[in-house]
Length: 269
Image 1 (cartoon, rainbow, N blue to C red):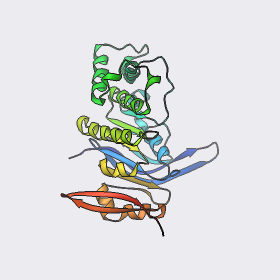
Image 2: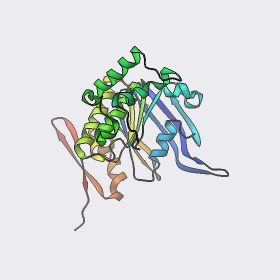
Image 3: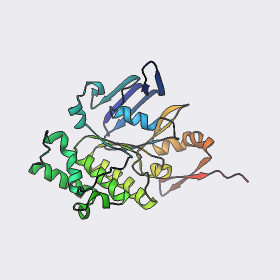
């Protein structure tokens, strides 16, 4: 049975100004489990990136509590956080004259100290991360020569080399063509299974999330966050209600004992 890694209680997210607080989302209660792929879905402006930044400790909670590995997020030092949470952001890294292997090696920085010297164990961990992601053929390439899909795999390998139990990804399939989107989502799903890590990502790729994720989080400014398996959210009507105003409906089929959920556009004649 999957074990809870992250527990969120009465969480409000937002930004603190000099004289005021802007609340983006409020009263979030949810649990994220190890060994699972969890996908956060919602429209632009719903607060997905703000939630991810709050869970990653880049932003303080406006209210509420986040517990990771049984410990309050506020109690972690920066060094401890770097060994607990790996983050893969949407922004492209503008790095030149650095090899793929060297970039992945930067994931060892929480362990290598000020000079960042990789020892034999660090190099073995980097090599293992490269193998897990399946990019051995890329390790000697310069980062600036990579395609978007290749670069995203490299950043995932860097997060794996960091050896954290939790990995957060902000729109990891943005800017990718469809085959690359599928490949990245399948990779993350497989990694959650083979490593037992907690992998949580935001995405706009609804169809892929429904097919590949273990748990879906639906987020908007009206309802906050609703969580459940794709099957549960489809069969109880939550998906249809959530996306109805966005012009999306769902066909649900039972094929050989497996539920198939297919989103479709509502087109009025």
